[in-house]
Image (cartoon, rainbow, N blue to C red; front, side, top):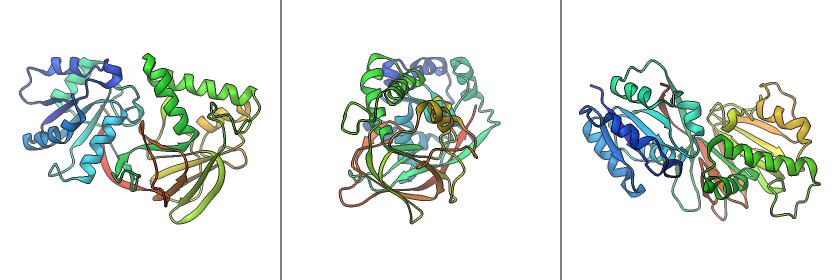
Length: 319
């Protein structure tokens, strides 16, 4: 027997989530379990109720942060007899995970029909990034993480653009454009705290082998195939594994020459000196600034590197 469940975070997208409207479309459906996540403290209870209802296909109306929280609970605790298939509905402020692994149609009637029918024809299995040892001691299962300039830029994007109601690709583009403009037209200034393009003390180890140590621009890692703005800042490099990680040098290479190849080039793209891309099953990253994982910020432990490993696979319905 199959049964759909719909979990809606009504506060997603700065309170403009489409989730409540989707609940209204499905309200007469006795065969659909539904819940509103008005407080994050309710999340585990909702998942246990879905498991008791026999939910096999879990649809998530939210942004990246709620998806991360759900994946963490599913991975770290035994809630369902078997992990449900996940349907990611892009209803949040940022929807990077759903853009790669979720529904392509944003039409609510189409989404409601799919939830009713469960006519699943396309799925994709993908492992998480398991953040093993953050400073708060709570492991996380996300799909994207970074430190250095990417963490600082994400924090700025949330404070400045998301707070004004500018979300998704537009907010990311505005942040990137501002940073690229400074890098292109102003001299490097490592002492200017208002600039993202400054050096950060970073160290990266992959599968036990040192990759780099010193001052770099940023490190990013993911199990997704594409990131925000459909970027693929990964290329053919050493190692094997489901995690793709890239390290970018400081000073920032010529923006006019390298920005587009860095973001959208092919696997065999030519890259500037100091840029590295690898595949791995586990990473260790040292950084003095915060890390961002799917929009959430935290610090590494004080006396050791942050450890990241390949997490369990979840299966996503592509709609």
